[in-house]
Image 1 (spheres, rainbow, N blue to C red):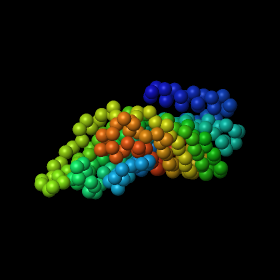
Image 2 (cartoon, helix red, strand yellow; image 1 turned 45 degrees about the vertical axis):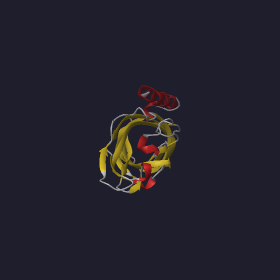
Image 3 (cartoon, rainbow, N blue to C red; image 1 turned 135 degrees about the vertical axis):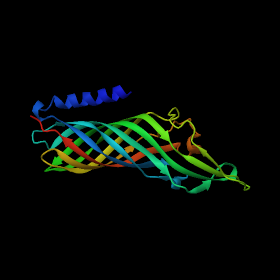
Length: 230
């Protein structure tokens, strides 16, 4: 699927390229940060908090009109998403109390295809995004207090990198604004959201079922640089 995503982005760029002059096409780099959390119907929502992560990769910008006002910009980005658990007590199984601490990181390959408007340097952009889950790392610790008292017990997440219960393919969207200087340097603020749940529908045990109907969402702040064309 990773190869399919990369090939799809390349084909979209090639299609747009056919309508533009070759010398106007610009390749570039992007790097920045995600500020991510969960959307959807999340149980015990107060225990799940925003998490910062890295994003970075490559892009290609292909003008669709002569003055560069409208262009298409496929990107291939490594993107860290996820959430942190703050120590908030909530009701556990059989009437006991539990407290979760730690974080979970989901490492994705994101392939957005953005339609971009450049009005004198001010940027508006939006488009679909395909994401593929590369790996995960669950660093959660859970402290459980029995319902009738007694000594609390603490356990760490098992199978910390197991992704078998997660949907590795994800469709979503991206929208944002920014500013691009004439030299190709840009600052972009984006929001990206998923259209599908990332936990498989038959997986009712992941975080005690809290995330069965959860989706990824993130604000992104990044710097981009489009290499000047010859």
